[in-house]
Image 1 (spheres, helix red, strand yellow):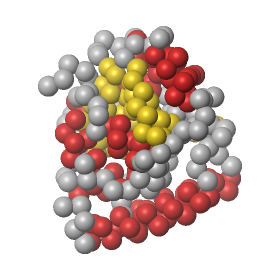
Image 2 (tube, rainbow, N blue to C red; image 1 turned 60 degrees about the vertical axis):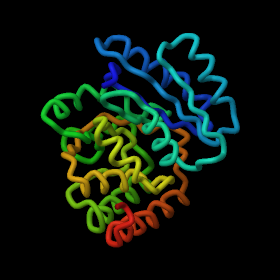
Image 3 (cartoon, helix red, strand yellow; image 1 turned 30 degrees about the vertical axis):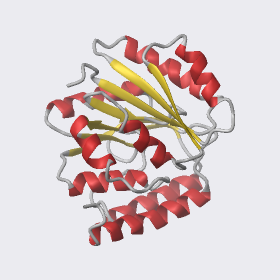
Amino acid sequence: MSDIKLSVIIPAYNEEKRIGPTLESVSRYLEKQNYSYEIMVVANNCTDRTDDVVREYQEKISHLELIDLGPGIPGKGGAVREGLLKTKGQYAVFMDADNSTRLVELDKFWPYFAQGYDIVFGSRDIKGAQVEVSQSKLRETFGKMGNLLIQFVLLPGIKDTQCGFKAFSRKAVQAIFLKQKISGWGFDMEVLALGKKLGFKMKEVPIAWYNAVGSKVSWTGYLESFRDLFVIRFNLWTGKYK
């Protein structure tokens, strides 16, 4: 077993302006912990200076690795999958490059891992969550309608599948992400659906969330996620994940 307890995966697409402050925040948190860790930035299709910025921070932040996927694997889901399958930690968490959920929220997750949960994920829509900076009313309404549809079609009882802050045991990483097929925004739904199908114990936990300016999720992305919802449902029905 690896002596690394935690792997932190940060998928990044053209994040030259935001990745630095996020890495500083992540490093400040991890330096205070009494366990070993690794930080991986997965740069995917970047056309700006994201790679260069991360390399500059490697001189200041220990245990920081850059994985450059180039143009080969499009989508956040593809970046998260490739990153997680390269991790060595006993537990792994992925988070957004805009730091919309701070890594300190992980403190809420450890008690559930100690109780035997394999997947613990953040939620903005259950009691106790704090949405410190809200999205526009239109996006918020669209998101709530989407969550209701996701519950009806795929994941009943889960209030927020799309929050970009999810953690896994080593066993869950290997079992789920080797089967994951969706490379776009809909991958969050697929990951949780696979976790449920494979019988992993899962827990939805309220977190504090800050809406960051400059979201990479376009309206086209919402439509793609809608399509992915039914692709995942079809894949489950037809045994595509065996």
